[in-house]
Image (cartoon, rainbow, N blue to C red; front, side):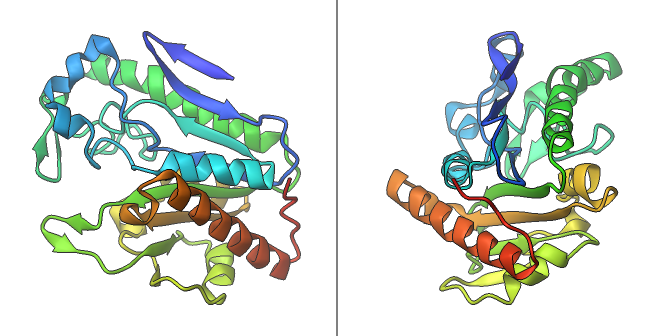
Length: 251
C-alpha cells in the first residue's frame, strides 16, 4: 500500500498482512524531495548526504521484514521535507539547518506551509503505523535507523545503539545478549535529543514492547553487509523476545 502526494509517496507499507507481532518502522528511509519543493535549494551532495536520510536503513529493514514476515512502514520522502520521527511542533521537524547544511527551502515557512507538509507527509505515515499496530494483538515496535560515522568532525566509535525512552524492557533484554559489535544504550543519541517520538507516539502509552536500533552507516554500506546486519538484528531480537516469552514468528 502506498499513499501519495505529487510525484512521491508519503510512505510505503510492505507485508501488511504479515504474521509476526514485530512492526518495523523506517522513518528516514529516503532522500527523495518532491519536485514541487525545488530540491529545497540544496546541492546534489547535500540531498544525498546523511542529513537527508539514513543510508542503508531501508535495505536492512526490508531484509528484516522478509526474515521476520513482519510489516514494514517506511517513509519515502527526505527527513528534510518532514522528519517523520518528530511531532509537528518540533523545531527540527522541518529544519532550516542540519549539521553543516543550511536548508534554504525550509527557511521562513509559513504556518499554512507547515500544516500542508504535516498533512501530506506526517499524518498519513502516522496513520499507517497506527493501522498496522491495530491489527496485532501484542505488537512489538522496532524502528530502524543508521547514523554517520563522523558528526561535526567527531568520529563515533559506537557501532550499534539500542535506544529507548521510559520503557526499557526490550532494550534491556537486547543489551544483556553479547554481540561482536560496540553496542551502547541510548547512543549516539537518546531521548534527550528528541529521537524517540515514534516510540512515544505509538508504543509507550499503550504499553507495547518497543526499541529503536541505530546502526553506524559504514557497517551497512552495500548489499551484502545490509543483508548480514539484518540477519544479526533479527536473530538478536528473536532471542531477546524469546527470553521475554514472546515468539517473533520468523517467516
